[in-house]
Length: 184
Image (tube, rainbow, N blue to C red; front, side, top):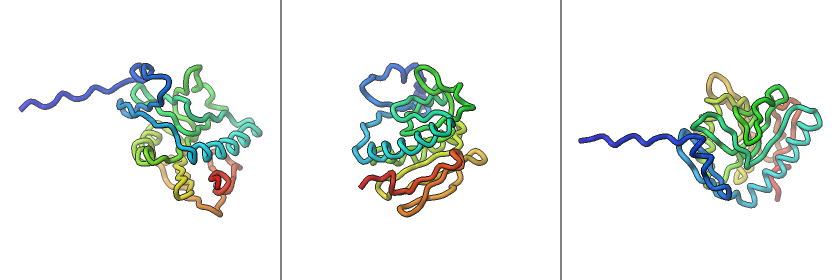
């Protein structure tokens, strides 16, 4: 019996040819079409972006971006995090078309179609490429988890629920109440 031929991994060059009117991510050489975020997702992102961007801008700490911003982690890994922070010391990874390297902090707001990938493949991908802090955010349970990069993997710094105040080791001094990012 002949073994099936291994599927060739796609690269950034293939990713760059995807339609401009659709969202895609490339994880380990495999393309994933990303559906448009739902209204709850967008409201949460808007509230989060206002708080984080204002904090970063007021302290001249770096730059905050939101989707759709391509983050090229390798030739076979290109993602569009919901929110990302790049410190002033690392501004060199910001190119004209995309970000070329691991952001300091990434936040992913779960949608029904992306939650599993956010918690598995993307978590591993972010750890492997050196993202210092990762926030999986769940609008359904109204929780924010703060994960910090340790010895090649993330460790849980905290799980924040309504009534709790989120803090960030990477964005020292940032704090907001969980309910502030989840509109009623």
